[in-house]
Image (tube, rainbow, N blue to C red; front, side, top):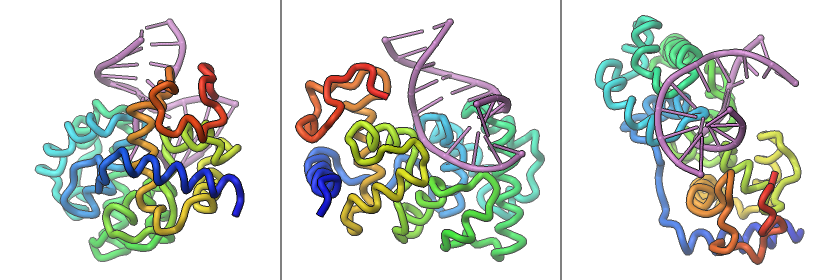
Length: 215
DNA sequence: ATCCCGAGGG
DNA sequence: CCCTCTGGAT
């Protein structure tokens, strides 16, 4: 067993004792809604996504409705989440593909999810894990990437490589919870700008403890 | 590497 | 002002 694996398992056990299990930080009632909310979550807080999705899903409840939507209407509905032109275009195009290729059902396979415009491994992993309970990998977002690097669980800044490193380091039965544990710790303690290392439960396991300009 | 892009914090 | 927020496509 590598030192990275030993450290990862200890980190998981410590953090899972602190933070409660969470199914999702995004509000949704169907896999398609989770997919849509996850597309909107790019470079945006989940809190803000949850502020626009009630009206969005009220007007366009599923892919069949969204497939008929006008670009400018969707843009207006998601504007405050940023990147609103790309997000609106991707949500409509993904919905059309789901209707045309998958009978209106959000696909449950990684390979199929990756065909949807605006969907790469991070979004696909969220939908599979939190929407369908099918854990194939670990979703790597801005928090997961930052903590993986600081904690010495990956040397890379490439999401695909970080995911591979994390999957190698954590027990497979823990994969589904890693994303939320690292996000919660990233928000509460290991923040991007000024990490509160003195209050960190896994500081003893952290190679970058106390490095204020941690990359 | 660069672009997309609004909103909140420091 | 600058940095950050559950990224992805070109």
